[in-house]
Image (cartoon, rainbow, N blue to C red; front, side):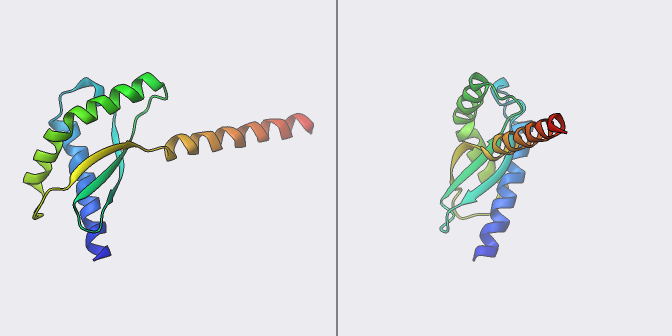
Length: 119
């Protein structure tokens, strides 16, 4: 069953990216990339992780608002594209791992600079 859930998660990720790119006209979701999907074991709820290029809090809030507004359209489109008994409920969540990775890179560069200054 876990193997099937993984396949469905990948399919949802691919399709939601396509739907956001081609069907959603809201400018607030421009530049949003779906980075992952977590599906419950009963396939009823999907948590969709996204990232945006901007780090500004206002841009993140706008993107979240745009995604929240587009959830119905995305779910409807997804229902037509997937062969599931019931289309899962969708929740969009910002993926913090990208920002976390950027912070780690920044700290490593800072340590490198300090090390060069000591030499």
